[in-house]
Image 1 (cartoon, rainbow, N blue to C red):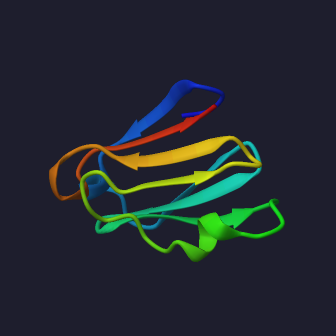
Image 2 (image 1 turned 90 degrees about the vertical axis):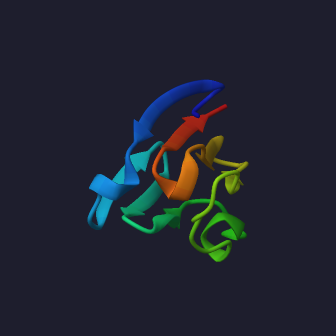
Length: 83
């Protein structure tokens, strides 16, 4: 989600190391999960969080207004949005 709007839904089982940038955040999409790999925020908590792998896993980069959520079973449906 970005600024409260859903901006992308990804099927992780179809990903193989793809990087996508949303605002000032870059996320790495792999078959087994997704992780923040770059952000312009000072504390980098989103990067330190590690990989989101399971349904319900959520991470936000608050300064960059970006939220990543695993919605489906076995990390098969990932939503990225900003608020």
